[in-house]
Image 1 (cartoon, rainbow, N blue to C red):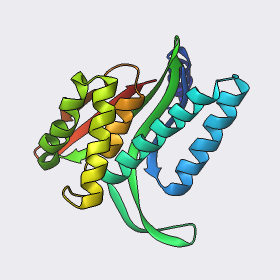
Image 2: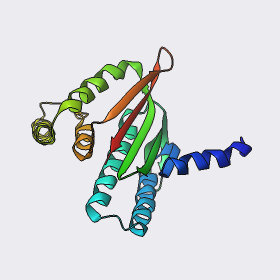
Image 3: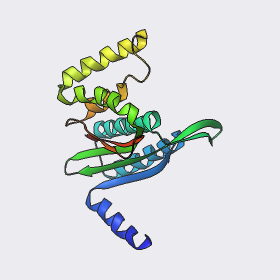
Image 4: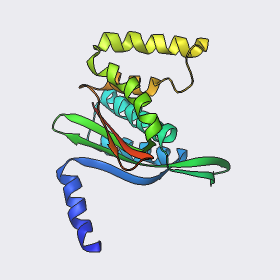
Length: 185
C-alpha cells in the first residue's frame, strides 16, 4: 500500500481534487475542512460568491453524512461534548471552470427508496422551481407538516448546483448500499 500512495496522490491532483477526506466526521472536522478550503480558495483568488456557494454545499454534504451514514461511532467525545461520529467520504475540487463536491457513505437498504424519492424530483426542476420548492418545504417543516429529515439540504445542494445533482446507490449486501452524491458549482 505504501508504494501506491504516490499514485493515489497523483490521481487526485490530476482530477483537480483540493481535499479528500475519508473516515470519521465530526463538527470539529467540518470546521477544519472549512478553514482549509477558505485558505486554498483565497490563495486562488476565488470570487466571494463562488467561495460561499462551495462552503454552503460542503456543509450540506457533511450534514448528509451526519444524517444518513449507517456507520456510527456512538458516544464519542468530541471537544467537550458527547456526540456521534459518522463515517463517510468527502471530495472537493475544481474541474475546468466548475467546482465539485462529492460525498459518499453507507446507508441502510431500507432507506434507499426514501432517498431516491427526495432526490429524483430535483433532477428536472428549474432554478425557480427549486427555489419555490425549497420555500414550500421550509414552510411545511416550520408548520410541522413534514418530518425533520425533509431533505432541505438536498434541495439546497440542487439550488447551488450549476448542473443536475448526480447520485448513485451501489448495493453491497442485503443490509447496506453505498450512497454517492455529486454537486457541480
